[in-house]
Amino acid sequence: MTTQQLTEQIKKKNSFLCIGLDVDLNKIPKHLLEEEDPIYAFNKAIIDATHHLCVAYKPNTAFYEAYGLKGWKALEKTIKYLNEKHPEIFTIADAKRGDIGNTSTMYAKAFFEDLAFDSVTVAPYMGKDSVEPFLAFENKHTIMLALTSNEGAFDFQTKTIDGNELYKQVLETSKSWKNSENLMYVVGATKAEFLADIRQIIPDSFLLVPGVGAQGGNLQDVCKYGMNDAIGLLINSSRGIIYASQNEDFAQAAAIKAEALQKQMKLILS
Image (cartoon, rainbow, N blue to C red; front, side, top):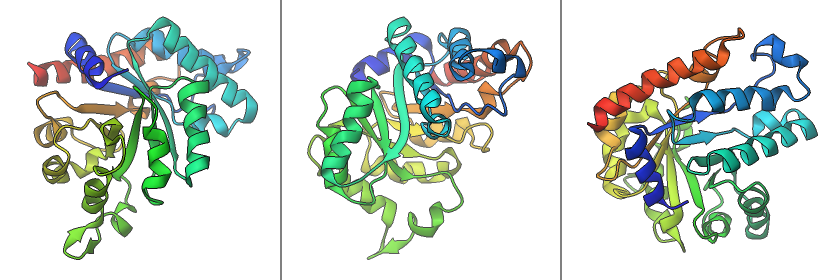
């Protein structure tokens, strides 16, 4: 999927909502545990109830890897269902990979070729030869951690080196990498005040913004500082949507939460 196609979907749906599919078997409705594949059953119900309200889904792979082979199979079935039933929706493998070149190439093949995700998140700590293998895939997107929403982000990301914060140096450096036009960036919603500076460095790139909802991020502030002429934002909400109810109406409850965010986005876009 191209960024132009993604932007067209945002305008068509009046939404730049990304829903995180972070499935914890301890939190899903108990009746689903009787299913042959409870993780997939949960995901399918959420997708069926919310696909018209969002433009992206983001499974965090840790929530699947934790359950071994059955978890990976559920992830495989989930992405296959999305690609077959809703090919217009942007898919993100939230895997946060990053390793030396040949290993990164194999990670990229796993998510882009085998599972057929549109994008994958990566950590840039090892530099360009750990990220460029992901960027080599045509019409696939690499979403690089830039400024995250966790408390520990201040341990390194905002430290000043030679008069410039580290995250800004990472952003500047990444623009010089081969196929950098395939880069997107993760910026936490709880760091909305930093977005104006970030947009000075990467004015045209898409930003994946987690942290709206359960983590306390504010949608209006993110849009005020982070939106560009092509919208350029994917706002992620996970727990605040998918765990809106633990009863049999869980999918409908998720849709209500998603619609509430979508309506706010529609107002902002208008």
